[in-house]
Length: 298
Image (cartoon, rainbow, N blue to C red; front, side, top):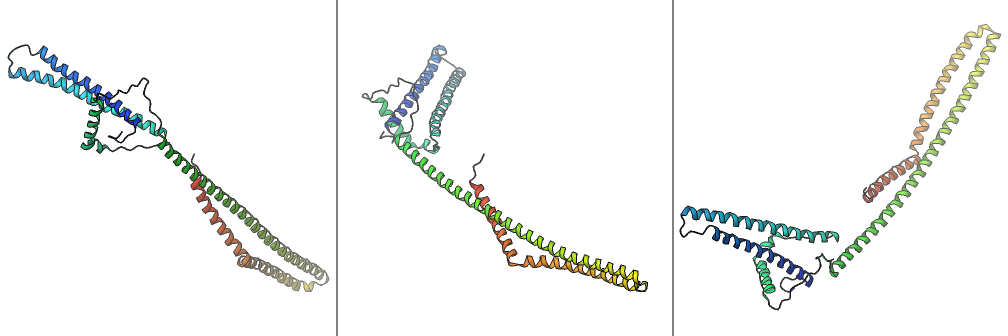
């Protein structure tokens, strides 16, 4: 439609609405005319009226006309809302969001354009009426709108595929990082187990030597005690010395174990292993945070 910039289908819809509005407007105008006619027939039966009588007659007429006009304006507003509801419902089925500009409703130029269109449409003698034999239904979007929707759907599908591919890559990286972390943890456990076995071996060997020494001292003490009682004091001193030696050796063993732990922690293999585990833990935390961004919500 050249006058309003709409296609033929929408032109017919506008004409139908204008026909409906003209019909409602004509009925209301007839109602207003009947109000005045009823007033003439019921109240204007005398030749002269006082000021109070004229004021009363006009007040009654004002109330009736006011009620009729108000009712029509309210009905017109509600009718427009129903029409907008039809349009918005159809748009929502196609996942579209329509926008309206309320300020354009008071655009005098556009209002005059609509008035001229209505005048030309309904006063032309050659204009054929539009017959709606069936209940009017909202038609689907035209081919141009469908094409735009198809393009938008294709774009969203492509974006979805990219996100799926990216998510899959992140999942693979996370799985590899977890596997590598498990390997490093097992390697660390093996190192710790080897260290423990080494400590146990050294401790057992030292204890065996000490036990052998104590056993030898006890045997010598018993032999000396049986042979010569005068050597009892000397043997007791030797036993005390042996006990001191045993305590000293045990202290040295404890210091040796602490030194061994300290040296092991200072080894390059231990530091490297600890740094690798720290980096892997940071990578896993980062991957999990990135993965959480793409997990679907329930």
